[in-house]
Amino acid sequence: MLAASVEYVNRLTPGYTGGVPYDAPADEPDAITAAVAEALTTIGHPPKAVPVDDARRLKHLAGRMRIVFEAANAGDLDAAAAEINALLLDTNARPQLDRGKDRPWSLHFHGPDEQLANGWAAGCAAGLALAVGSDLAGRLGVCAAPHCDRVFVDVSKNGQRRFHSPQCQSRVKAATHRARQSNAT
Image (cartoon, rainbow, N blue to C red; front, side):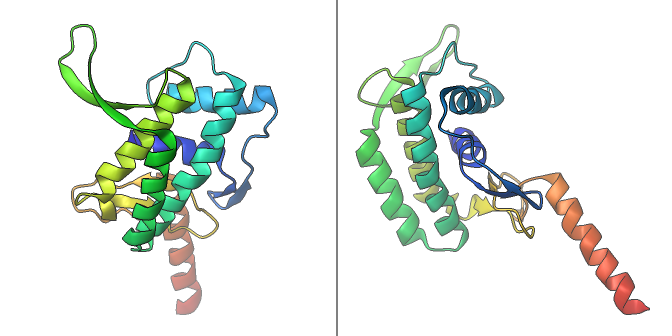
């Protein structure tokens, strides 16, 4: 569910990516449903259809999930936990053991009904809660590249990831190299 949280925040909230402004999809039906469908497909759950109301709710909740990433990145786990607790309450996340065909039982979090937004929002809130409530809290990050505020979960062995993408990392390394070369002359 952390991967879904990252996808929703990065695709559905405005800001910067890779040094350029990023506009969140408009609330018009085609744009918002396409963005949510793309996020779900990226994490391996292509939807049959995305209801417009669900897409709009997920866009709103993505803004709230961004608050969690930013607070955790800044080391303010109290603020992250407060927002997560509000998300858990608002999504009515409830644990449930589910079993897929030819798969063992696994723990999932569901919303109060089967609506797409309720299930994904509850799962994302629970995933963020599990991360902040464990040693993964320091692994929620915001890209350190200038003019980029996309989020990530650091899954590296040493926990030193600073950028949301290899492109941002390369951009910063190239700028640092150019600055060193300029100062050397």
